[in-house]
Amino acid sequence: FNTIYVHAVSFTDAFYDSNIYPRTLILPNIEYDPLNIFIEKAHKKGIRVEAWINPMRSYLEEELINVDDDFIVKKWINDEKPYIKNVKGRYYLNPAYEEVNNLILSVIDELITNYDIDGIHMDDYFYPDGVTEDFDYEVYSERCLNKCSLKEFRTSNVNNLVALINKKVKKANLVFGISPSGNMSYSIDTIYGNFYDWVDARIVDYLIPQIYWGYNHPTKPYLKTLEEWMEVVKGTDIDLIVGLAGYKIGVEDVYAKEGKDEWIENNDIISKQIQDAKELKVKGISIFSYQSIYKPIKEVEKAVELEREKFEEKLLGWK
Image 1 (cartoon, helix red, strand yellow):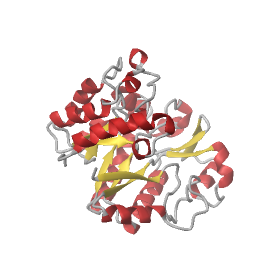
Image 2 (cartoon, rainbow, N blue to C red):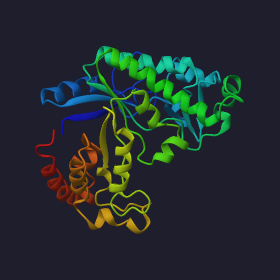
Image 3 (cartoon, rainbow, N blue to C red):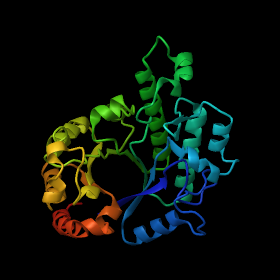
Image 4 (cartoon, helix red, strand yellow):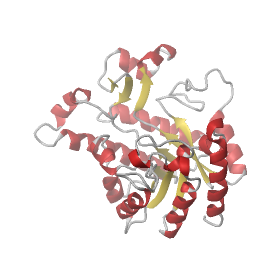
């Protein structure tokens, strides 16, 4: 492996010393900067580090009590500003507003300026799954009613945010990429992340579709899904890196119906997927997550060990 995508911003919080976002609740009361230490140690071993951000996703309702009242996002919530809305108990920033985009860009600028990162990486959290019209109907009505659909409006907002981030990252001569859901229709129609638009506009350097399924999945079998994603970047200079599900090794894939036991009955799925990716000449593979591969839970430890031996052999010589 030559790159690690490490969480820097997960829920409008910071896994580093930020002057903008509060320290993540996952690492409270620590007096060191975990991101700085991580980058330093990784670079000594020749490993690239990209700062992984989830720009729109914010806190759960019950977590706000642990957040300082002076934090801008909490102020927006308390003042009932339209910049952030509650969806099923979690708050999400609304990228229709310049104030929101400026906040996100300021955090990215902070990361680029203060840390020796090699790029910015975005996950597949755009508009929340299950978002309703009241999330943004007011601003939609003001700007786009009778001119475009709500879907077009939201897609345009995401595209604009992606373009702004890309411009900021490119100014620093760094790499920018996104890991969209491997389910194309879900990404486009449910959370409004239209990867075709990003590719057409050349506002990403790479895509890492999360093809987190085995070969026996009834609707998203690995090979067919990978080939569909290859078509997305075909004829462009945008890299396709395949996202693989290390966390599924040795466990039941509950939504795979007749293929649900595939990851239990086989200990070479990841290695086969890597081999297929190599043969199809994609740029590379990325496994989610580090912990699932190198610090697995006790119940699947042996299965992971068997799988890892096979896929590490497949990675030899692939740069």
